[in-house]
Length: 199
Image 1 (cartoon, rainbow, N blue to C red):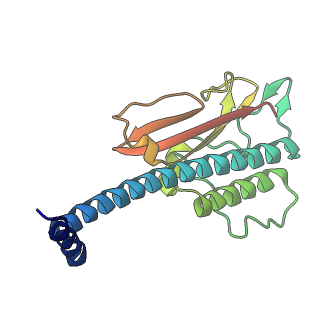
Image 2: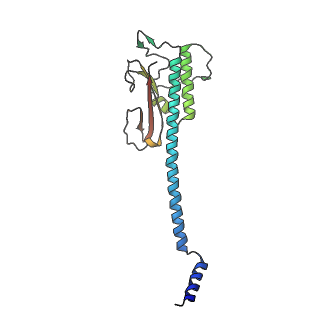
């Protein structure tokens, strides 16, 4: 084939543009890339949300323990921790619900503790991925001798918080008792967070 004719063929191919197959292949490559980026972004968002919820839990637990530590409530008598403290809340009990709890008009230490718990739980409801069922069932503030479980004796105050977590959804009815753990309740993943202090 003469060089001139070959050049004309190349120019003709160049002028007629892309074929339909080339366009489709390009679109497939772009689509796969966009989907991969979207999946990566979703995973990253879930990680950021989880980190944010953990940070909030630490802040709420810290505020609870600060209130407990600075309260005028007398925690001990004869070296025994009072198990009937107004700060205590058993699992499956509801938090107190008081109007204007975040701005209490009392000096009574027991009433202040009750108001604080009401305000504390309402703030958690507004800022974390929780609902009333979760607050009732998985939140507790109790007496403990080991910092892991509620007991009828011991010198520690143990608190547990919980929130819904996509990271915990993959569990199959397994539960763990570590400080920052997952539990699976009716195929819904829940993250638990525990901490303890000696008031």
